[in-house]
Amino acid sequence: MSKRSAQSFYIVRGYTDANVQEETEMELEKALEMQVKHIIIEPFKLGDETASWIKMGNFLHKASVVSGVISLSTGYFKKDVFSYPLAVISFLAAGVYAVSWASDPCCKYQLETNIRKVEGLPLQELTSTSQVILVRRDDSRRKYLQNIVSISAVLVCGYRLYNLYYS
Image 1 (cartoon, rainbow, N blue to C red):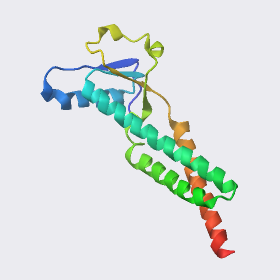
Image 2 (cartoon, rainbow, N blue to C red):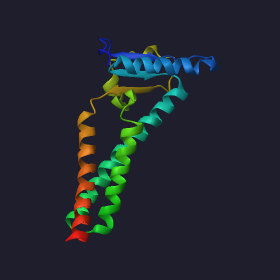
Image 3 (cartoon, rainbow, N blue to C red):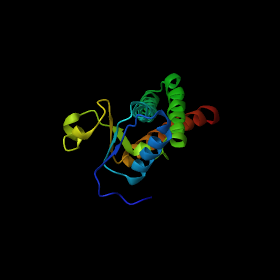
Image 4 (cartoon, rainbow, N blue to C red):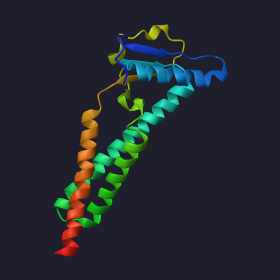
């Protein structure tokens, strides 16, 4: 893992030439590897794709946690009709997240929609009015929560199934 940069932001500039899509993607990869606090993406297409990718990761995380918590809650009240499928959904969402998302450097970033939080950034220097701003956040607690909830839901349901058939 590369050392954290002293620079607090990186601007991925938009270009007028349509053939430089790969170049801007490489520039975004460079910014992600530099681990800067804020990344400002000017090209609309790249910003939109990145925002969609981050939203998909957030959806998988929330689906895993919420379905796991509901599975554990309904399991407590002996509502197995809901508990088992929700545990499976939680486990599958956590698995897809772990395989396709957790190793991506983009998972350390979230979309910044509150303009007050980015007032110190040089937004006046941008050439685009539809930029996407990413902010780096520590997601280790979030991942631990997701994995603990998902594994707990599966273990509780597995234990209950075991008791149902073998006791």
